[in-house]
Amino acid sequence: MPFTVTILGCNSALPTANRNPSAQILDVKDQLYLIDCGEGTQMQMRRFKIKFNKINHIFISHLHGDHFFGLIGLLSTFGLMGRKSDLHIYAHSEIQTVLKGQLSFMKPDTTYRIVFHPLDFKKSKIILEDKRITVTSFPLLHRIPTCGFLFTEKASLPHLIKEKLDQYAIPIADRVKIKDGADFTTSEGQIILNSELVIPAVKPCSYAYCSDTAYNEDIISTISGTDLLYHEATFGNDNKSLAAITGHSTATDAATIALKAKVKQLVIGHFSARYKETFELVAEARKTFPNTEAAADGKIFTVKTSH
Amino acid sequence: MPFTVTILGCNSALPTANRNPSAQILDVKDQLYLIDCGEGTQMQMRRFKIKFNKINHIFISHLHGDHFFGLIGLLSTFGLMGRKSDLHIYAHSEIQTVLKGQLSFMKPDTTYRIVFHPLDFKKSKIILEDKRITVTSFPLLHRIPTCGFLFTEKASLPHLIKEKLDQYAIPIADRVKIKDGADFTTSEGQIILNSELVIPAVKPCSYAYCSDTAYNEDIISTISGTDLLYHEATFGNDNKSLAAITGHSTATDAATIALKAKVKQLVIGHFSARYKETFELVAEARKTFPNTEAAADGKIFTVKTSH
Image 1 (cartoon, rainbow over the protein chains, first blue to last red):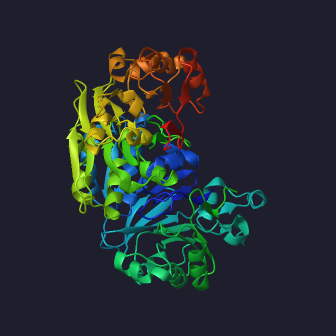
Image 2 (cartoon, each protein chain N blue to C red; image 1 turned 180 degrees about the vertical axis):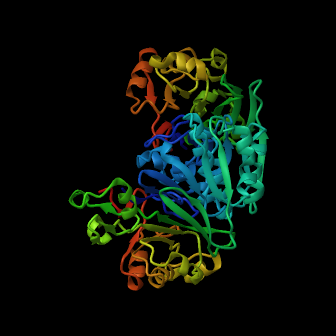
Image 3 (cartoon, helix red, strand yellow; image 1 turned 45 degrees about the horizontal axis):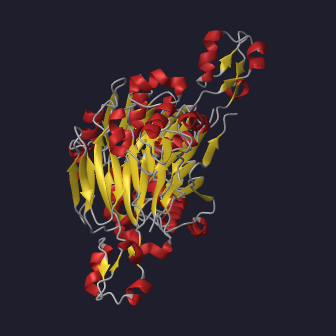
């Protein structure tokens, strides 16, 4: 089953012609998780053929407009589509006040229920756990309270080897135990080791989203060893002082975090509008962390395919 | 000087991949007037190279989201850009309540002043008069209070013919009167007719925006003889009953209004997402009003060029 990230927008606040503001879709086994929802997200979803009804959870990192101005439009569209299932929004508690005027006037949620989950900006916290994933929020370092999100796939059970089940005539009751790691003892008292009976499960995938944030080593322990890290790189080293003033990172900052956290792949994004092209930012990051790619609207990063 | 309309979005509420929701720019002598501001308007402005600082007046037809969800993003961007000049917004008075949460939380207008002008949905009214144009709002027929807008260029004065000024040695004081239509009497008592002394001014241009609205003959007198009419055609005759239920028009409705109002050109827009292509809607409208074009994002309709 797939574990992929589709970039819907990877620009910072000022609008550009070819990059939308922050939004992306994490697809875990065909359940879609929307991370941030900048203006135009719903149009990007149409462009990149994202199924609206597969989204039940929306994560808003912080209340700067380029991360949530698309939310009210999406909520309205859900209403126009006659959505029935609950929609869970994980965001700063203030979001309800901010959107109150529009929510009470537009009433986008007449056919469905919106459940707001306030984020904790002081410490890491598990904010969602379902059969597919665990989502942990953790504080980032920005001008206003901001959270990163770590998505960790639930470990799946190993596969039983059919030939071995037949060979040892293993009863149904024992098969569950074997999936959980038990060895099997035959009626003759022979012990068959678990490793002979199963194909190990694929290692669970993980994805960390860190935007917006200044360079912050406090997050390293949380995102350590992650398969895929999206880390903002609003600027390059050419604008290091601007990054410091605005609470953002340079491409080198992002790469240094990736290196220290020993992640497998880094994707940089949230580019300032001053960078028409992003190859220089990627080149800068690769000096520190070679396995770096630049986000681009519509680009899909695959941690695991569906096969 | 130019008089053109650039379409930034011409779709109705449900998002599509290739049409943004309602927004357009009227350019009158390099002053830009923004009409409606659906989600994504500011990105469309970047794409189509619209100068942000040339906009001082925004007209919002009604408070359905696809006509104003892009406003808060644009206001924020104006703030990020350090805008100084006043911004005038003509809309339903309720818009301030709807946007209150975002305005007080985001404070987009710390560097400039937003002046709200409440619309009158009961009768036609001049809402703006500057040296370039007169803008008249007029009630449309929709599910909620909605206004159309008529933009009429101010008449310019005729041009004096230099050779005639020299030939008759016309004093400066008389030239102003001649521009205003007076004949000239020479010192010998000869009357020179005004028509011999001037090249008539170019006829003032006009543009009418009617979206969203059901078929409504009450608007005909207001938009009569307009150079360019944008009239919504959310549906075709294949969805006539849907148009009636939702307070929208068919392409035939739009064309009939254009015909009865004797406008010069009709542009149809605000297309339902169910129409992937719009040529059938144009074909339907042309049966009634041949000079019809379909709006498309980025398309520019020129009433008068800059030469």
